[in-house]
Image (cartoon, rainbow, N blue to C red; front, side, top):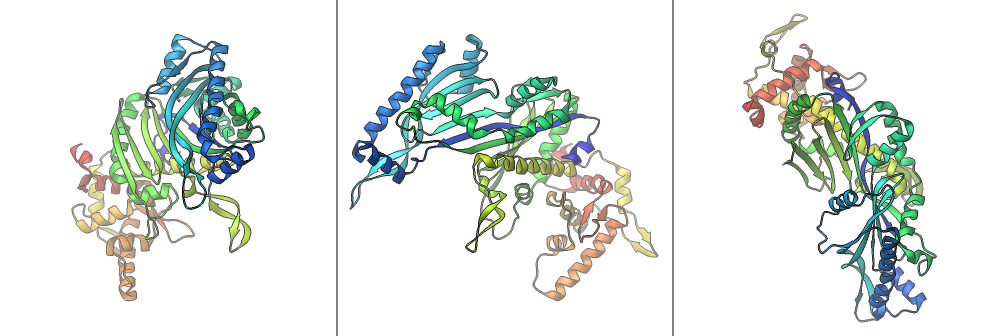
Length: 508
């Protein structure tokens, strides 16, 4: 991210990175078929009567929610369709019947949820997990700490609970306590008086004692925790986490011009290898998944989104003055976390796939911030800046160094253009490139050692042509090279002009 900010230092006021929308889910120990059958056995309930028993207990939950709404004088609304935009409805309720804290309203609708179904076979019947439709209750609460929160509970066993809150609302309240001035529009800050202090506050989000907070919400909506389920506690996991990096620009007009170029680079300049790298993956024969990129027109501007195994990165323009890059983690198992685990039958501490436990929320923030930063820096490297005809003429001239001549680059030569295209790939923006990377890109892979050495020597000579012009430089104590700022400006502009896959640049 620093590379992107340093490229436009006079245009950016500051940046803030924090969680946006976070969805937690609570599961009881009876969320699996065998566990639920054991629970019914202890209660003396026949398996065939499981549905009737579940409906009876669910009625207690619905009655409790209705009583809560009547006690506080707040509306209770039944929705005919689960597709109704609940957030918009709640905002409308707040406008018509404002409240400063506590319950806003209760919504009820029939939705799909995880429950149990009676199955028959050769032996005795059993209960198996399945998707069913049942009545679900939403309690929208204005919380002193988190702002507007919704708590959803299904009214059939296993009474799974979902808690959804917004990290920007939480941060706004922390900035109020700290005396930091800010301007907020929806879930976005368009101005913050002290960005460094605000970022330190945002980093505290992962240190909240989440289990205690979430259990408090669960006790408000599930009265059975005091009766039938009094010996049980919910196990909480982070079901979905959005982590946003916002760059606040000084002028709307500047961001509008820049954003069109960034959209072009994001769709055309970023390949599958780049998107994989943002998520810590490599494009090789072991990878088995689809990677998709999609650009959608929205009002105002447009949004670009890159999918990879149910995780994605989005970029869009918020309120005309904020450039937001957001990583959404739905499948944390694709990332690694340092924890205890078993290898070769022994318990060791190492890097293992990350689970959804709320204790891993700090790692969600780390991988998401790295992905956002890498995405922005890669786009900064792909942006060639303004055209410079003199610079292109200099590229084509012959250069002499230590008595040897090095011919220039011909922008119309397909071989020279292929060299520039290989070096300018987004996957090389952070870690640079090796001789082998460019050699395989230009001449292909081969098992013939003699041909491989010959291709490596040809690649070295190509590097020399770029090095004597100051377009690339060696990374110290490594075998890697990277583009210099001069190289980014000249080579990438040459690529944008002559690369046939960039229609927007050609039109400009």
